[in-house]
Length: 97
Image (cartoon, rainbow, N blue to C red; front, top):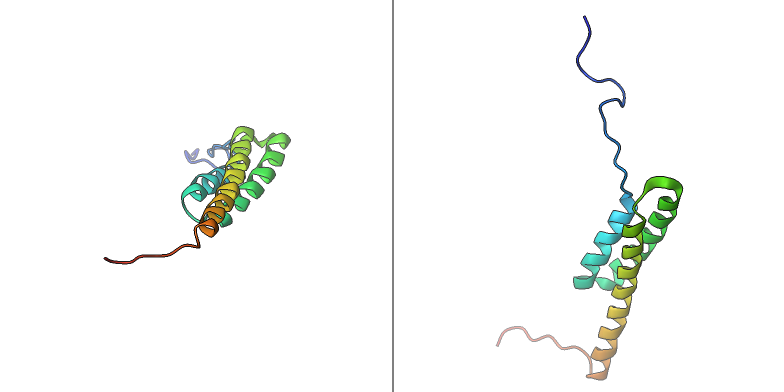
């Protein structure tokens, strides 16, 4: 009697997307809003490694390039925000009325 299940990797679909390119893109997008000094360099690193993997045939070169650009924007945004805060006498937090 023949079995109906799949054995090995016959039933599994292989995704053509690059995981590091996706991770870099997510870090770049989230880094615009939160923790840009941490997520920006991570997006650049993930994007660079993802771009190298994309050249090796894994795909996702567009996402890798976008994550590098977003990572650079995150770092520049952090520098601009620190420059604005230092020129205005620093940041102050007001809680309540």
